[in-house]
Length: 390
Figure 1: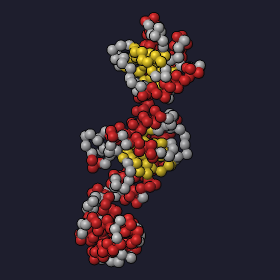
Figure 2 (figure 1 turned 60 degrees about the vertical axis):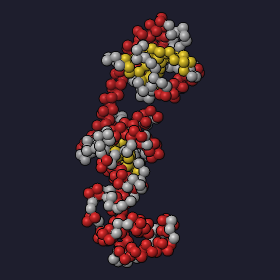
Figure 3 (figure 1 turned 90 degrees about the vertical axis):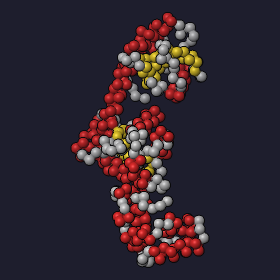
Figure 4 (figure 1 turned 135 degrees about the horizontal axis):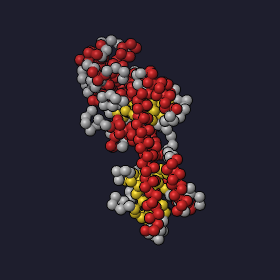
């Protein structure tokens, strides 16, 4: 939870004037400030609020200044709305009360202080929005092509305490397959960045920055001062509202080289949507393999004429998915017939029959290492380019 000294001090002063323990929550029901809670019972109540307030139903204070709600494990709780200058609800002052304390005389004492607390909370939120916008801008600059911009961004991120000093930083590229771009998907990158930043902020005190590049479709960028936990990022992106966003994770590098991590993150991301059947919605550069290298090519624009000659000849002779899948499995198995038959779940005699047909279609010897490399890589290129039937 971020600290905001003026708001914190005002909450503490009011707490001592009223002789009540106070908590301030924002619009999302997250705790943003609280007074000292000294007794065991007060601390137990505070811990419960810190752990559960964001799952509480929003108090019904749109047409009334306050509401008293009986909360499990806490008892009667007073929610007093806090308004900004436009009279929009920006949060609530929360305190445990008895039925007698919820009477007008007690509420009047709170009412005289709520305006000041609301002003300070609004200022805190305004500063937070300004800081968030600054963070977005610096994140995009950090991975830009301009060396001077990258250097200034790296210096500002540390000096302005957006990121802590670390031995290594990890970049993430995220967005949707550009071929699936439509008005509904256009803002998905920004939504995915915002969701990830919100998740980190609400569940830890860790520092992460993010933004969206000014490109067609807008590729999102996240920068972590540590390795990324893949299952955690996957859970975030599995939210149906973020589909079909996918992410690529670059290697850990010094801050000044974050753009290089982002370059590889982009390649892993590209590979994941070029071959979604082979890669999860979160893919790392370390595990994307040859597909990451091939992703440097403009595969979306490939035609059969762009493939190696052996594959061109093969695709002109047959478009049978069965034969092509058999050849690919055979090459992946390093020419091991027994392993290939197990992979395809077929009898070995069936495999030999298919291989004989393939030998009649491909000039050259399957035992020739150069030919096998050309066939293996060429088939992968054709599959990533979408030139093979499924």
